[in-house]
Image (cartoon, rainbow, N blue to C red; front, side, top):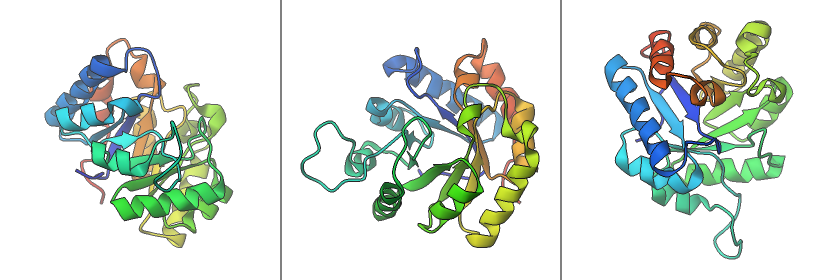
Length: 229
């Protein structure tokens, strides 16, 4: 399907209640909210469930990780060929909880291009963002590692950093989109991200720990733009 902007990305990581049929049930909730609101949601399921979610829903599916490697030896590693065959639309690269070297980022972005997958490179600020832009990624995911799962969204604590980052990306490589994450915990945080110029936003714990996930997602959808201006 491919990734459309704007969107809101829900990352399952490896939280309880997101594997197998439980994860699929949440994906179907995301799909229902998408259909009801006209806003776009994407999902990053646990890796063994990429095919399950891709085949059973119409959601854009993002793989949580991939290994920069050529076919052959590499027991237990995740190949980009397998993710593409499973129906993934994009890949998270260099997540704060699963870091990659700069060379691995370069190789992975290139391999994503070969297989038609969206490369979403996680960076913690301007310096890392500038380095990643040299590889022409499809999207940069801006989040400060210390904000992850804290409810302390950068869109509230340092909105000027988001604006400056968006401006830098637009100047250096207008093709690359910006997704804001890390500490996003409310619909207001999401609205602020788009107001500051982001093309997408995302969260994990805020969604997964919500007492009423559908209500939380619906509130987020109401504060999302329908399309990029």
